[in-house]
Amino acid sequence: MGPRSDLFPFPNGWFVFGLSDELPPGKLLARTFMGQEVTVFRTQSGQAYAVDSYCPHLGAHFGYGATVEGEVLQCPFHGFQFNGAGACVRTGYETPVPPKAKLRTWQLREVDGFLLVYHHIDHEAPTWEIPPVGTSGWTQLISRSFTLNDHPQETTENSVDVGHFAFVHQYRDPQTLKEFAADGAHLNTAYSVKRALRIFGINLTHYEFKFETQIYGLGYSLVNVHVPLFHVTARLWVLPTSIDADRITLRLALRMKKWDFPLGALLSPLVARMILSGFVHDAGQDFPIWENKRYTEVPALAKGDGPIGKYRQWAKQFYR
Image (cartoon, rainbow, N blue to C red; front, side, top):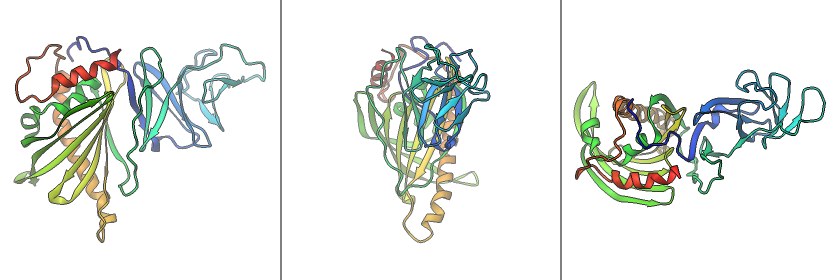
């Protein structure tokens, strides 16, 4: 991977740490997040919290043996217990709690099946939120995840890079349905393209699909997809989260609006999996380019590229 030039490794904003279904009551997830070790745990009452992964007592990592005991996280080394606010509420010896026995906490939200953690270089509180869209009437969330040598700004830029639709994905006749519009941390645009219908590797025809992209920061893109020919409406999430300065976890997740005709409830989850497989295939066409391209600070943009320049101006706010 080439140098990222002026791209700071870790932008500010909300990023997906994992899926809600990965974290049942009494369990924890410990991962490298934005170059730091973070643990998310869910208490027995169902509340999820995010804290630093190293115990302030003697530095044990919670990802290696820590447990959730009722409403607290217990260190595996000496049994120190911490609540969701990061306060040590008990030592392993029934002795007074040391004043410095506190964990750094991270802001966490659960939105539509995702565990979102807020990152800010100066540890400032969130100034914007990601609105839920609801799950009633939609299939169960399904997803795939990949580890790539990339940066969230680069993957998110793909949504406005109109020029690559034809050359990388062989989409035909791209049309702008909604012009680039930014409002604070939110960006919105919409396009239609024609995609090949293939059966046994043979292109039979091309069908139209429309997609409206709602982008919140550099880590959360919701793509509303509509395919009129098949009466399909789906939501595709594109979710890049930095692991360290060079790697991201890219999650692709999907829900499909359930068909309301007979057998629709049975067929909808199967079709949803087919749609996700198609999008995974298309995203996979981008992977070798993303992993080996160099960030060009001053690109030689041409007519037909799409609003890349506007996107990059908008993205600057997440590094201040």
